[in-house]
Length: 59
Image (cartoon, rainbow, N blue to C red; front, side, top):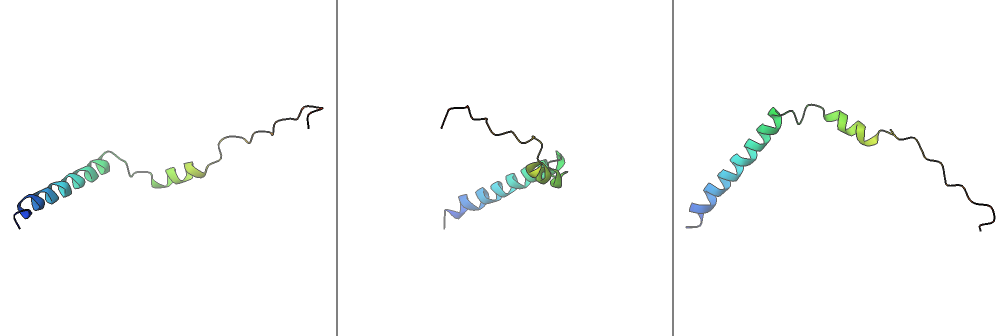
């Protein structure tokens, strides 16, 4: 039971650190455009490339 003296403050500290990181990310605008990243992932920006041409006489 003596280990709880160390584990409880450690757990509270890690929870506070996670909460501080989350609040920082909210304040810095990390969650402003949630749909933009999804559309950028499926957007087809590059034109399709043509297949390489075969040389005459090659199998």
